Image (cartoon, rainbow, N blue to C red; front, side):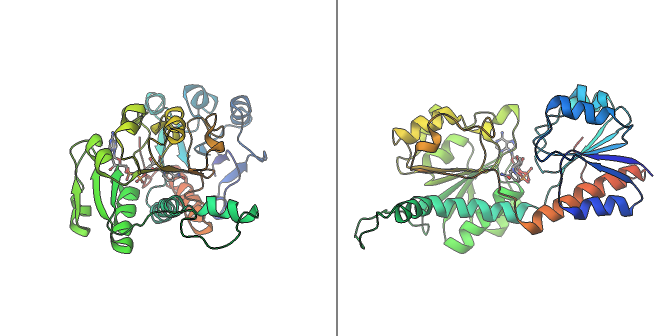
Length: 322
Ligand code: NAD
């Protein structure tokens, strides 16, 4: 039996798996993200052998040192930019994530944001609820079509490919993409074009959707200069990580109509929003819920738990990132 700490309540399936494997599991009782001090204190209360962490937890050297027996931190997310991988390596701590099980859900969600933004759905909903609808009108809340438009995908990995494939097959869009490496599998699956630079994608696409991980090289990948390269009628969708887009520059670009609209699920300083963002009508904003379906959150819980179980059994977990 080993001792496992889970930093916040997650769907039961993973907790039950851990307990069925014979482990003692403590789940943080706080209905919210543990502050740094709360996390350090919680890890200090027992000699935990494993930690199941969330993307909202900052996991660095001090956190690893507060749980010296925990040689696995299983992140409940595919992204792991919340974890200091160097500090983990120095201490021989294994880090795992939950890839694949959320790909379809997040791709569906990115498509939903594309449609919601292009067809002005939240704006139309606000308009109708406000009692402003006084009859059909030829030019009321004009959106744009998908068919024949160019979708630009930045980061054609699992999720980016999922969005590209759906955009092509369901909406007959033209697809161009940029990645640090061409995706041959995607190019076999659908007719799409690899571009050598981010800038080419930005200049040519009607809708740009961002699916890169948050790294030093992708921080502010979309900045003021790059927003200025986009078409005037373009739409930017970000379901990756907030700091990939310079949010202040985006607010200005949306205000000045440098681009037409944006759909965002993630923010630079979550849960805070950049000043002025929520006042804009040409942005659709949602609270980091792209993977939030009952099915997917359950699968993520199961996968994170299985990574812990495998590690504790002396096996290599399936989803090791470091
Ligand atoms: P993935 O690793 O399969 O794909 C990422 C792609 O980005 C890869 O093809 C990689 O080569 C490419 N890439 C890396 N650096 C790049 C760069 N500088 N320029 C261009 N491309 C680059 O990952 P995935 O499963 O598709 O997930 C992508 C990201 O989506 C995650 O890292 C995570 O941050 C984010 N995400 C967000 C949510 C949400 O709730 N909003 C949910 C799941 C994932």
